Length: 201
Image (cartoon, rainbow, N blue to C red; front, side, top):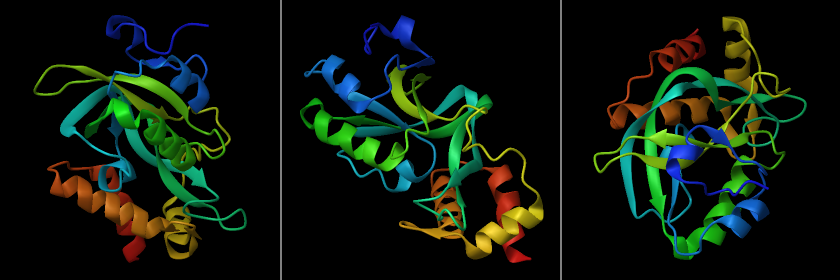
């Protein structure tokens, strides 16, 4: 099996060859800090120890509220939405450095939160920082996933914002919290602003 920690020149924009927390833990050097890219709730609720963080922009991916959530922000009977990182464009976000000493705990927390149904595709993404580029773990979504919503109408977004609620709260609160956090960090997401306008109708 290809190692999960190849040199940065080889691992940029590569999906994990075995996308399980056990595989990542078994191959990650115990002395190496882990970088994680956050583009939505990880920015305002990382839930792991952070040694440093930087605003960054990844190329080839963009943030989109186009992933069904039947647990965190909705239910099977009333699905909600969460953000996904989809191919194409670019995405402003935050990259976090987490300590090697907390690696197992960090990975377990991330998998419990992001991968309860193994929906995302964990992937290495190149993230520029003021100190130079780093390679970070990110959770992306392929468009052929059954969790990808495709294009939704304004009425569909309006209904979801009004009704969807899961174990972490409503889709609307999640979207608003993300929008406000991005704005506080100087990140303007015009697409998200337009979606939130549907909640005002």
